[in-house]
Image (cartoon, rainbow, N blue to C red):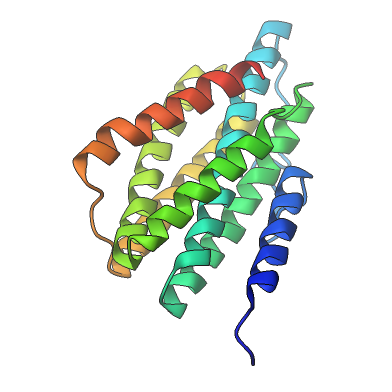
Length: 213
């Protein structure tokens, strides 16, 4: 099997980008954790809140796809690329679940999804260029911060919305698993300035913007 050329890599990245922003990201095909649960009655303002929270989570999953693609592009070890690819497919399920729930609430996904993806692709590629251990540590820290973010959203959901809660809880469980798997492969903790300053700042911009757009 020949090694992929630059043209192959470009076409592969273009294909991944188009699939994600068009709502056809690669996934495992699992049904939503909320499927089969009774739909709660929500007031109009509650539906708007849930829709916007799910739009934020969807934007985060779009960014996750970009991060994983960038990291796979620059990873050195086949086993690391395989782990990143599996996590990306599971995150693809999250992407679809959030989109379905946002649409059920009458909310469109973020109009800036192409920007979230491309910016994250660049960040992921940079993390991969720093070396697999740093890249894996970046996965772990990203998942830690996503876990905290999901906890905040679980607190903001209307108490009766068990459908959305089931989705976010399953996502949280898998974010923890992805981070642990990355560290098991030899991940190194992310330096303090990146962990405490850069990553929260970038996430804050995306969260605040995706809430409205």
